[in-house]
Length: 353
Ligand code: NAD
Ligand code: IPM
Ligand code: MN
View (cartoon, rainbow, N blue to C red):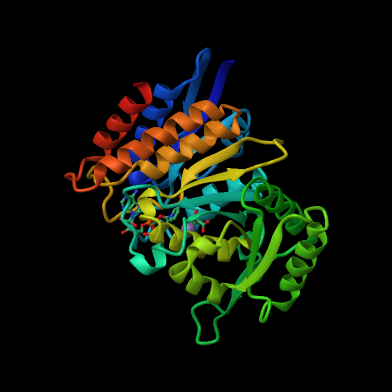
């Protein structure tokens, strides 16, 4: 009960459009006695191009004082000479994930009834597709541990070092085991231990060691390349996947594609220790190719709002949103395409009804 302070960062491109719909649905789903207090933060390409600011320290500290963060997407127009790639991704999105210790990047995937999957009937007949990727969120090649020398010369040389710590692996692996125990008790480690032998050794050892605390969870291992095969040919085999930051990024776009499209894929950047607010956002980006035209599917952002409510302990309200989405998805089959706001309106009406 009481008020929930939400930091809202719509960001760039379709981030603006889908976040408006997620907020609309959140308001409609507010549990009795709970009042949302959204604070909007205008961070992203526009602010950077106008002021040079990406995420001022004072703004980060304000954001930190909220109960949760709802984010749309970041990323400006491709090829803009004033906005090199990475400025916003690193300076805003990854900085939030790192500073707020979002070490569990939770990305659930399932095929909802009525949703068209590009998978063949033969693949779909293998079983229900319902899994969750626990992507490590604070390490791997994402930490900015690298550099370049002799830039612009024929001898230009660059490194990007992947960071793996036993501490970082252990905490995310334990979280993944706990989730598997609450689900179908199956954990798959995805890595590339045949090439990335140093970091891979840490993942392999810790998955084995932590496994002794979860004797009822069955564990298997796939190299990332083979994992993409199974994601396309037998995704029903997965329950909980635990993986490094970069492999998790790639496998979750594929997971989204096989379970109905990137417009449906939700995520939570979770700080399980609750030392800082967690952040909820669609898996997709700012989609400059369709931005500003009300063509984006806001479902991923709306399902991310459901994950947000669940994280804050409002499981019933979270479920109400999910059920409304499931109803809307079933009604989409064969119907005409709708504008972003029309999809949000329809889901909000189901939530309220
Ligand atoms: P993207 O996810 O933005 O788009 C990939 C394709 O999917 C595009 O064709 C797009 O139109 C489509 N798409 C995405 N979301 C959709 C939706 N809700 N409804 C319908 N179609 C949708 O990925 P990209 O093109 O590789 O990246 C664009 C920008 O976004 C880049 O600057 C990138 O760095 C950034 N990005 C940000 C995030 C984030 O903020 N979390 C995630 C991914 C990419
Ligand atoms: C995602 C995005 C980000 C990532 C980028 C924009 C930094 O692709 O959220 O999946 O790689 O994590
Ligand atoms: Mn991604």
